[in-house]
Length: 410
Image (tube, rainbow, N blue to C red; front, side, top):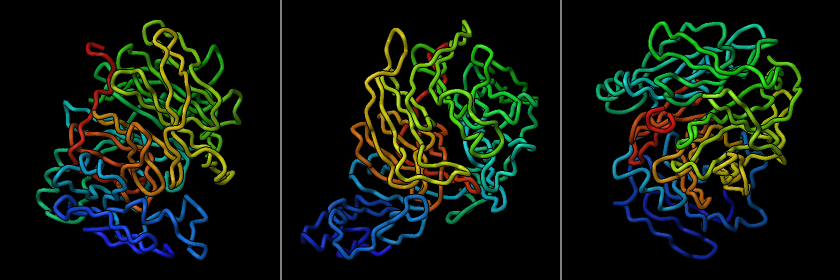
């Protein structure tokens, strides 16, 4: 888009025409596929500028750089990227949104598991058709990238043939007790649930929870294991209804805690429009929850509703979420799934790719794809796998992963 009274010079410096200030970035600091955009360069656009009137379809790419690329807003993002990052497409299928959510990296087999879109465009799933779980071999990805020095590769994915107790998987984490820990949205009268799936054939399934004191949940969305107490925390929202494969909601949209030892379940946070992604800091003291209220399914988008990530303190005794505050308001679509790196930076899938915020709420940069990303996962240290519906990407960076399976020994 045209940015009115200013222009941006990429790769070496950003020029602010209004102030005449140069925010220099040493060329040796700026890695390949990276663009630096100084916030001072667009703080004042002028009365006749071409302002954005939509956050889902009009994205902020003032340099008109061709994706995929690293869009840097704060020099701290350089530490995340490292000296020689790379960003490449690793799988694609233009007719099927095979790479949506529920990413889990299984280190023993070096595979990433994930779900297809449930009920959305190109998801091939609806009231009468379930979505699917697939996996991709990171060994095959590395081999394909080594054999092709530049450009996209298309590594085959493998679909899992799972039990019918798995219906519209939307969230996942772990491995937990050596299994994939997934949440399902349910389909029609079939209930939403928390399940364990063996990452090895025959991929047997164990259902841990499918009701709240005899009532079905609305449509479960995402899940994480608390890093120190081992309890499971999950979000429940109405996207199954908004995507026309679940009945109208009969309960509020809330965040729950499930004790895998006692099977006790309780609400730990409410007051959301659409609670979605969830993630804990490594010490377990802080939790982040995204609210994707602006994305309304068949009701359409409403830009006046939340597109935000909230931070909470986790009560050490009750595990309730307290002291809610805004971490970030996404400038592109809504922030969906959330992951953290070992330095506590917060990653979330948005309408333009994956955005990254510092713990203080500063937008550090983006893995800019020019297309929607719901989720991403670290496939070990330095490998960020990004799910972009009809495509998958791998960013090789310096940032390190955090354990997602709960306390050691769980």
